[in-house]
Length: 177
Image 1 (cartoon, rainbow, N blue to C red):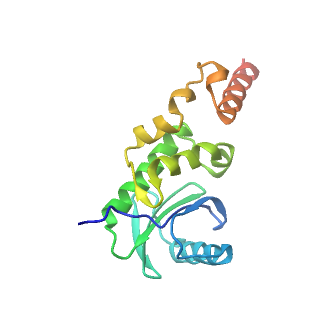
Image 2: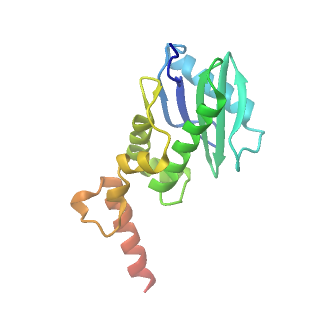
């Protein structure tokens, strides 16, 4: 019997290698300091690459790490050395595309921090206990709240961060008139 693909962690780091959003599904890193050391080693190994247009793959500490960068954010998905790189890459692409949809194409550190709740919802929709549930960005974004991201939706149907973004957009438009 074949086991379903498993992910060990999802990392979203800034351009200095600091945490923006991370979630671990494996006990390979039992302490917070071990997790931070792994994040630092992943960042150090990948920072000189140019993974802005396509997903890149590397091996690190008996793990396969797929990654992609956009502006000042670095997206990483880690699996065991026996995992299929294509499946890990589809998880990363699903996450990246869902976050792009939810942040309305403005994927940077500031927007990610403003919408951290949506990013963690994406993590939860993609992976449950390390098992891959979904990789389709439209489905992920839909479940994480894209329906309420409509700026014309009533404020009662929007998350707090979406309501603030809507208010900010309305204020900007009114100041520009």
